[in-house]
Length: 307
Image (cartoon, rainbow, N blue to C red):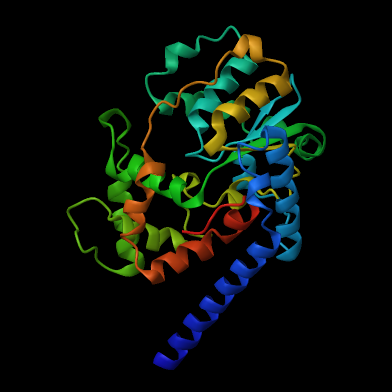
């Protein structure tokens, strides 16, 4: 049994080494790809090129799933689609969506909590029955964009938002639910009465199977799984790390910069990017390898350094 485990670990390490090697081959010169030397359009074009190469190298399936249709929002007037990956300023973008699709709508009246925004924008989801016969044509002909974020920073943000720093108005019992799921999968928690520990959370999401449907997992599933950039040819890929620049570019691209003004300030911040190293130190080498393996397509496609 120990021999089998050792072989599995060696295979995992070998695969990660291969991924890193391929990343170095595909990774562009950083001096020509940083925010100081290129604008939103150039960054997006480079990301689109990388996505295409990674999808080809790893022969990633391009089949569109119901999960992905659930995360894509429609603006029929502008023939526009937006894929919403949570923890990538998605609440702010949905606020923009409400203003784009209904300029007379009183957005400020539902801004007291993010749940209102998510509920109000559900009618624009591509999975809605009214789009059942036309969504393939929409995906083929409408303009499409998405925003991405460093995988580890995004997961830290999801953990802090949903399990560690919970506001009373948004307490949906997620921590208790996840603790039960983790216990069922791996055994009793080391702290059954407390919040889910970060290392427990990472262990679970790194081994989450497709059949393990978690209502809130859009906050941490890989962007490739949510938005399927291998099967959907996005016209623009923006980065959370350059949110101001890239959102301004989108407004100009849509010719709505005057009516939209500045991009909305995110409704709740978790300081995930500045705290990422603190959370990384909570993970042992096995959990780090498992995490990178789970999010490898996001790391390689979107040009992020490994944890």
